[in-house]
Length: 493
Image (cartoon, rainbow, N blue to C red; front, top):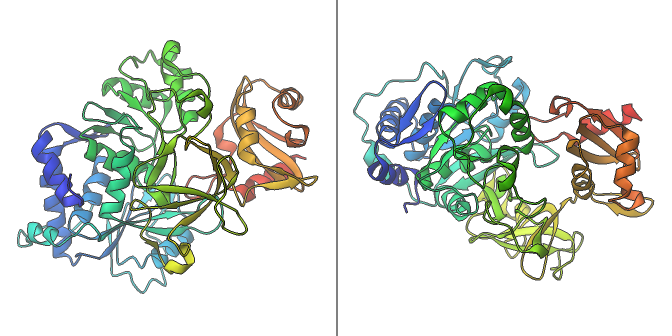
């Protein structure tokens, strides 16, 4: 299998021809069209000055066009910089500066956000194009020759992540490390040439670009996407496109399941490996039996898992599965960095050919240990059989009366309570605080049931009950903003 985007597009166009590679509600594109359209787009972009190594920002919602532009750029060696449609002007400016973006392609406005106003103090930025006003090709650029200069080790993409807290980081991945990371997890995610995959993640996240676009392209699958997921429209899209695999957010799957009967949506094409809420009862797994795929932007998506349609051994229930090929995991003492024995909680460190190549404006010595491991700041343990259990973030754990509380452990226990759809836990002035999305439950009821599942010091004493995910504060990357969550909980005391 080729290790550059250009080689991959050529190979899959020859193999799959007129089969759709990506579908949105208004358009679809075949593998053959992907080859011809991205070649023509690349010709126009190259004639406008973009070349191998050029850093090109892209900000627009999910669509067939997003896929065309991203792959046109990367097949000729430009470095794609996907940018969140949630960014404010200040945040966008900061990311453009951090990544030294030279060219920007953007929609003018999306969902109330305007992106091309007041972009100042960006000395690297040479040209800005609206997404509907791109340069036309001249036919004079030899795209094949230019693409032939791209080697697997060349940078492919700079993806921004905030982690769970702190400023965004521009994570650099090469063609071979990104494609290798995606390939290593395809079997665990049940993606093959028979798959019609729906994934709600925005393409500007690694979950959308890697686990969506590149997974479909590598697997020979068909990806189904939409700009703005809305329950009724999404259900009709799933039915119309006979989607076989629904991956993504459990909250969204549960919301769709509640509406499916009203919409009379036929979801019978969905197969095991999809999120349980959308499957018939007899096809759902017991709680904890299936792996929670685990990864991060720095590993270009999941680096740990187990086939999503298969129960793990009973001793591994609740785990994230095992590390994929291409990733070595060790558990280290948070303070000393020393390797810890199996069964001990510590910081997860990762190493291998599928991990990040670097980070914008950061030296290798700042990022990696002397022996090449990347400290993730995630906490976990490896059991004797090599299964990884996640225990939250090292910067999220806190003490209550001298005892350590791991928010992820409390969140998992709260999610087991009937009526609880999601839970978010953090420290509130030395007390355990929980924001809970639930139906018809009181804080007293949740507290009482929490005591049956958790040690007394771990049971939340500060509660915020929410009707939907809309009340959960999130940053531009979509992750929970812990600082703002803590402020909401403090106000609820």
